[in-house]
Image 1 (cartoon, rainbow, N blue to C red):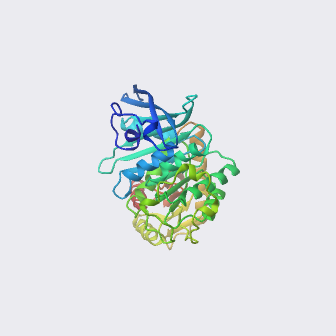
Image 2: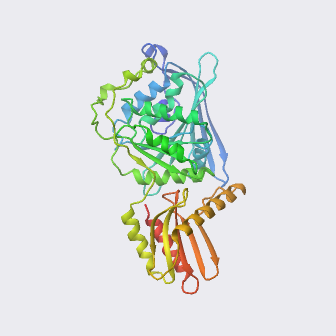
Image 3: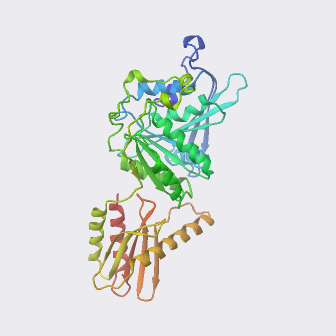
Length: 421
């Protein structure tokens, strides 16, 4: 079952279940009690198979996952692309996996881990695959822990450790729960079994205080921490933000060699889960103070300034700018010398206008991302276009209605937006 779910997709029938006497003491044993394949029809009329496995487990499933990944994903640069979702509020992760399964016509693999005596569900692990044209196939995992206990809590960590990217979706959580989550993630990232090079936090709009908490944590130097503020209006918005960041980091170096003296040889893992329960902060090697690597999806100012300068070729353009939608502040601007426009005032007004449109869309049940807003008043026209690769930013251009070809200006703005990666 573990090979089926955590390795290549394949039929699990015919495999010999792991027997308890084949494992060392406190090891992992699993007995398959049910396997089902149900066929459903999605909203597009496609036939989609739902695969479900129920396993009775003893010992530590997290330890089994670690050992399996240590053998099959030792080198993340050559391993299949894997993204793990962590959704403490339980709002979006399952919806994202279902949406990807429906869109691609690929099955959702579900593994239900059950307690031997009561058969209660300890955790449910979901996986689907996304086949993209001219791109590597993506595997997306999510673990929903149902039962308390340190062994069960280690299951999501075991999945994250060997992923190329872990996405943490911050939903409606209390401040103390967010503090506990960040502390747990920091502790996990300092384990010697951790190899995930990218940690992406998806925050709700205007959650600057959460971003400040993330920035204040001394993450390991080799871990690239990214923070995006996204309007979590639907599974598609969550996935688009994840995919934009994945396209940005997939070609970057992975888990770099250690520079702080922490042993990272292959014989250092797996850490036994029974040992994790006795670890104290002094048991984990103290890393040297790292250089923070917090990415908030910001742009290269020089390249962006050069791209905006190209918009001056549009007849009737008065000014253009890249604006932070959460604050209304102008990041980069370009104006004609003879134009009397206040880009700061326009940017603040446009940020408020975009927030109002997004709120109205949510109230109407529209989950689609707002791409463009056009307003016209007197002799001027104004075009607002969101930046797909940086959901917290938008472009605004001010145009002279009498002198501008609006269709051409919009086309130029779309080309500019596509180039802002």
